Image (tube, rainbow, N blue to C red):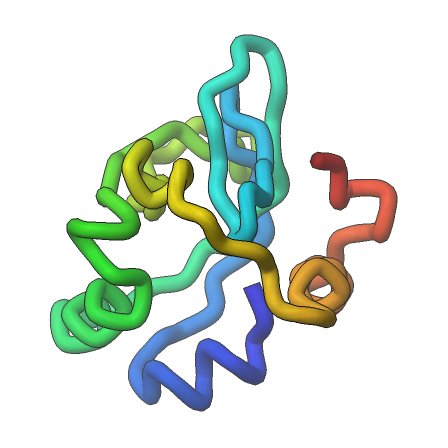
Length: 123
């Protein structure tokens, strides 16, 4: 979610707004992920990206081996809109890995950076 990281990695990415992904919950098996959970919502930040940025992001996220892409509903200005998200594959989620030191703190910093409160970070 970090604006600084996104702008450094994807030169043409444009920040749009914060939103909430409906019926999904944040999880961190070792890297950030979302999992379907009815009647939950997870904070997210929407970016407008180009096809070129998406191709770079695909490589960065390890698509399709580590993450798959899916369109989900996000609540923005009292409207539901379709957004693309990356979801960790079951095989990758089961791999024997651990988050690097400071990873979770970086996620929290990203939440704060785009205007969420620390309380919005709920895993």
